[in-house]
Length: 386
Ligand SMILES: Cc1cc2nc3c(=O)[nH]c(=O)nc-3n(C[C@H](O)[C@H](O)[C@H](O)COP(=O)(O)OP(=O)(O)OC[C@H]3O[C@@H](n4cnc5c(N)ncnc54)[C@H](O)[C@@H]3O)c2cc1C
Image 1: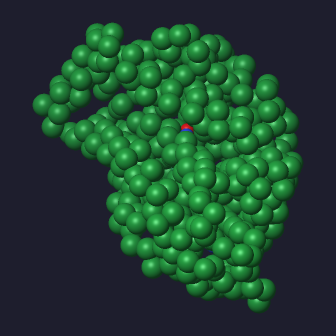
Image 2 (image 1 turned 120 degrees about the vertical axis):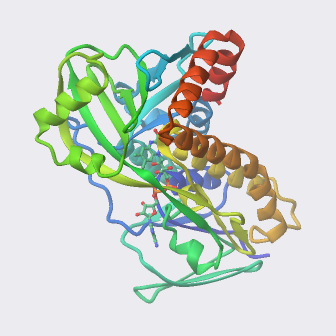
């Protein structure tokens, strides 16, 4: 039997995490990333892309050797969440019952570097600037032709190439996409008052605004704003943008100053009913696009990476990595989690986008009800900490 090898197409956070996990189990892995190699992060700048990482993600990143490679002074703990409705009064405030952090905020570039280092340390190879031209996949292996003419063969191809996945199209895997009416603006700020480890979220008439704590006196925002608002905000002078963000958050952090360059992202719900064919499987955003209002997209992707690496490591000696039955086991293991997150985020987005007065009363009453129920809050905190 020839040695089992995996090729990962896409060296984002999820592809690198799978590579690190599978390589740690002894599987030779090559990661082919389309983009150029990333320069070392400037210590004076904070990346505009930040992720809220759940305790389940932290445990996985620790296990694959990535967590300790993220500089400790660039990790911000979230100890409390304060969620407000759009009537100015409704509120849901919760913290971890045991006093442990609910999540950790980490910059995208530092997370990617830590993952690339742990993938390399575990024995995975990473190549940048690779474009794929064609792909054939079957249970006995895959053949990937690159644009530079080189041919990659392996026992399994893992498509981790993001929400517009080339792999998904090349494999003929069906997907449905829904464009949300919001566009997300992300930006970092230096603030007059420290955030105190509190993540805040406002469900507003014009969209959903989240403030995520960064270390010290900084915070990062994701403003999923309806219509053209996110683009209009991004085009403002920095001082005017800071004023708008300060006022939208009731000046909870005092005066604010924009740091770095804001960025905007289109938001889509992408459902992929089948993520596997014989010889190939999708993970991360390639397998599911979710609204960022719950900050769970990359967390879902990391659990895909973990599940796939575990399924491969535990396969019987008679099974090949590309066997469809094996890949379907991974697919089934992930289905409920992905479906539940897509359902909840999609319904919340819908509920808060409704303009009817009754809808407003209903959603704000819902927030107040959960806030008043100790059991509901415990359940919510427990879910946030998975
Ligand atoms: C505004 C916003 C805020 C968010 N906040 C959070 C949060 O707080 N917490 C959270 O969990 N999630 C969050 N998410 C979701 C998160 O960004 C994604 O789920 C995550 O980036 C997906 O990682 P990925 O590795 O699957 O895909 P990507 O990050 O898209 O990486 C895909 C990689 O594949 C490469 N690639 C693409 N095509 C090819 C190809 N053909 N060949 C080779 N390489 C290719 C790309 O260059 C890229 O490096 C947020 C999303 C948005 C838009």
